[in-house]
Length: 314
Ligand code: CP
Ligand code: NVA
Image (cartoon, rainbow, N blue to C red; front, side, top):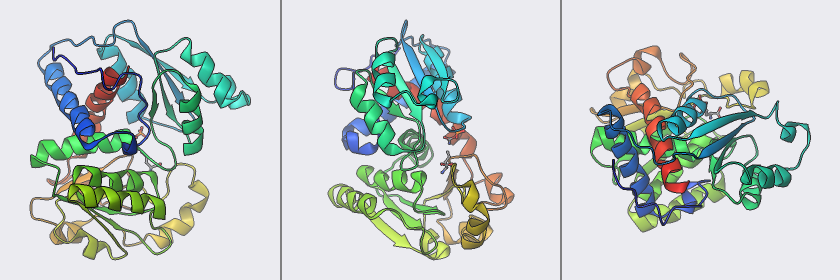
C-alpha cells in the first residue's frame, strides 16, 4: 500500500482548483493513479478505516454518487447518502446548523447543489473537510479525474491544447479553464451569449501566465478544435436549466463534436465528456463510441480520483 503524504492536506476543503498549488494538484493525480494500480492488483488500501463521509445531494447523480460511495467503502470507511429531499436542510434548516451538526458526526462532507455560495457557506461552518461534488459554477473533482485521464493517455498535461465546445458559462467550462494551472492551453468555443464568467477567465489567464498555458475564447467550434490534443464537450442545458432547453437547442446547433471536429483536431486527439451525454446533440454516437473516445475510462477515473481526494483530506 502506497504511503500517503497526507500532512499538508488533512482538514482542507476541495472547492475549486484555486485552493491548491500546481504541485498539490499533481500529487492528487499521482495518488489517484497509485490507488488505481493497487485496486487492479488486488492490494487493499484502508486509509480511511472507521471514517464516514456525508454526501448531500440536491441534484441528480450517477458517477459522483457511486464514485464517492464505492470509493469510501474501498478505503475502509462508510458513506452516507443524504438527499436534500430527506434531510432538514431541504425544509429550511440553515446551512450553518446543518454544517455544525454534521461536523460532530462525520469526518468529511461532499455536496452537490446549485449555488456555489451555499457550498462556501457550508465550508465556513464545517470543521471537517468539504468537497465540491458540483455546483452551477464549478465541477473540480470531474476535472481532476479528467486530467488524470489526459496524463494516462497522453503521458503529460502541460503544453497540451484542450478545447471545450459548448456552454462556456457552465460548471465544466469554468473548471476546465483552471487546467491552465497545470500548464494546459485551454480553448473555449461557445455561441455568443454563452461565454465563461469574466472573473473565471481572468483567474485562468493569471494561471496560464504563471505556468506556460493559455486561454482562448472563440465562437467558431472548428476554429477552436484546430490542432486540439483533447476535445471536450458537455450537455447544452445543465441541471437546473431544463426550462431553457428548447432555446438552447437552437442556440447551440453546430456546437457538436462530430467527424468534422475530429478532422480539425490533432490526428491522435482524445475525446472527453463528463457524462451524462445527450447523444446526437453535443456529440455524435460515432464519436462517443469511436476510437478517439476515452469517456468510460474517464468515468472510471472518477472513482480513483475521489479516493485520492478523500484519502488525503480526511
Ligand atoms: N460527470 C458527473 O458528475 O456525473 P454524474 O452527474 O452522474 O455524477
Ligand atoms: N454541466 C453538467 C455537468 C453534469 C456532470 C450539469 O451541470 O448538468
